[in-house]
Amino acid sequence: MKPMRKTLVLLALLLVPESPAGAAIDPFYQGLLRDGTYAYDRKDFATAARDLRLACFGMLDEPKLLADCLARLALAQDRAEDLEGFRESFRRLVEIEERFAAYSQGDLTPELKAALGPRLAARIPAATLQGVPAFRGLATPKVETPAQAGRPRRGKEEPSPAVPASVPVQAPAQTALPPAATVLGSALDPAPATSQAPTPEERGKMEQARKLLTEQVSVRELRPAFQMAREVADAKPALREAQHLAAEAAYRLSRWDDAATYFRRGGDPGEDQPELLFYLAVSLFESGDAGGAVAALKRSLPNLRQTDYVKDYQKKILGQ
Image (cartoon, rainbow, N blue to C red; front, top):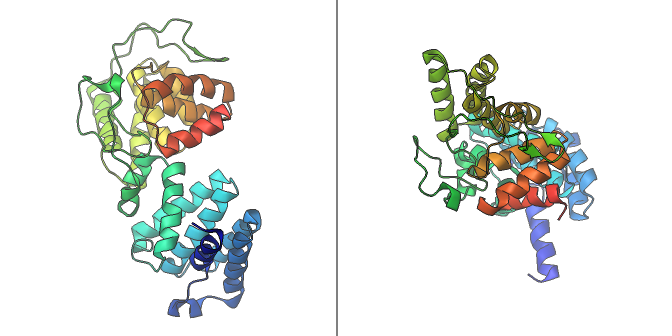
């Protein structure tokens, strides 16, 4: 695309939308929306994010306009490398989409959605996108890795996404990992040689949590999945399967510290579970263990589908 044409498209994308509902918005917030738009256009993304964040507060009573503002805010946060802010804007988009269908039935221009979509696919776990119908189309079909070929399937597998995000967490035989199973300087707690068998009630909780993780559910439904998994994991710290299930649920909710804790309890997932290794790498990275994240990611990559989401974290973790 020629530079001039690209600039015109960007201007068209970021022009403040004209809408009859806009008349209900205080002029102060309309001004902030314009200021944020102009700041984005001149590539002052930090200022754009600040102005657009404030503008969104003035649109809380207008869900469709709020969806438009949040989409613009997310783009500014993405360009400003404010990943946490980007995820928060996405969470707010999901909330108003679930309550008001404000994103899918709002007045966002096709250009705005086209600009936001690839960034969501790159920044948000695809299993999370799968849980919201309006964003499900951003997830790419799951491709079976060589390590998964021939592995027995349990239950319904999610047709996933930009990052392989939700395969049933069925641990291999309960065996102790050797002390050498470390992630650089961060040793994972080896799984004990003897496991604690779950009670029928605990087994039921695990199966229900796994079902929620493997089906296309909303973000809200992931919270009870995590709660059920963590109850069993906390009650049976030697049960590797429960620890990895709780770790995956925490990862899906971006609860990085919790995910890292349960991964350490459960022990090394092993190269035959590249998705879990990738979840481990991301959780360690986001919770501050950069060295552990590097080692886990390198071990996961040979058998991991290279999506935009995976590549984005590969660049961050490995510094490429």
